[in-house]
Length: 84
Image (cartoon, rainbow, N blue to C red; front, side, top):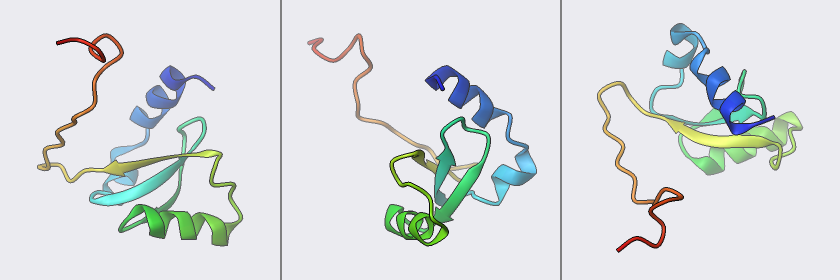
């Protein structure tokens, strides 16, 4: 699995499926083709994964924002890490 493949697959998830998770924290399978658990926060997602028998180190955790929600990041990109 590559990150490019993972993100490409996530983008192909039908809108009707994605809408179910608006405003939720989710765990994707490693190839990004399926959401395998969801919850109100990462802890709920972690617990749901454990109950379902998933290896919590073999999923990708993320948040699905509401359509009108603005997400602002504070992380640097690889080329910006040490820029001043």
